[in-house]
Image 1 (cartoon, rainbow, N blue to C red):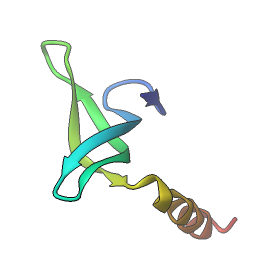
Image 2 (image 1 turned 30 degrees about the vertical axis):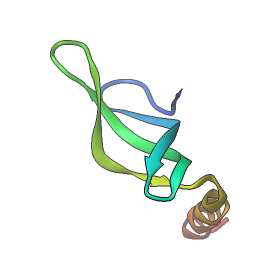
Image 3 (image 1 turned 180 degrees about the vertical axis):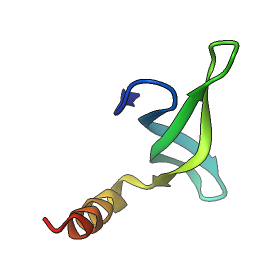
Image 4 (image 1 turned 180 degrees about the horizontal axis):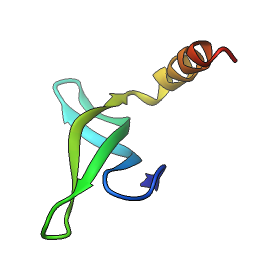
Length: 68
């Protein structure tokens, strides 16, 4: 896991392995997390999850939006 921001909530990126109908696959997940009153970090529904081979397209789209 990589913390992109600090504080509460945080933006965290991680690689996850999933078991789906097509078998095991990994995904890259960038998501907001918040810390509960009990101190546990919990992911929110706000985020982006896709296969690693799609990240070049995601990065290109973000750069296009930023005007890079």
